[in-house]
Length: 73
Ligand SMILES: [Zn+2]
Image (tube, rainbow, N blue to C red; front, side, top):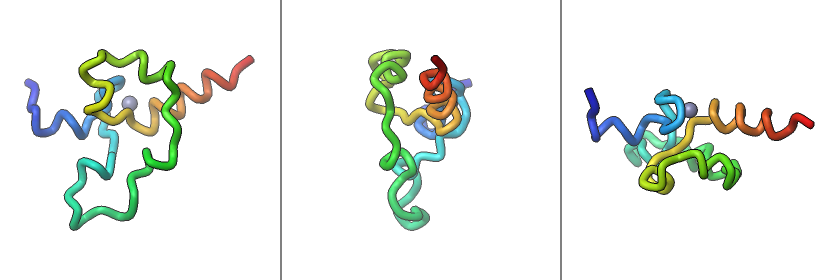
């Protein structure tokens, strides 16, 4: 079952919670979202369908996993 209200809280790659502060109500935000201080590589964003690219956040787990892959020789 898909719920469009909850969709934005989910990572488009793994379906886990992305914990993006942009999707958190202002009253319960704790500073800027972690994603503001991270760089999302173009190659990672390229894995997403075009429609998801600017609408959903990738979770930290997927970002870290991608970075780890890139670090390998
Ligand atoms: Zn993810």
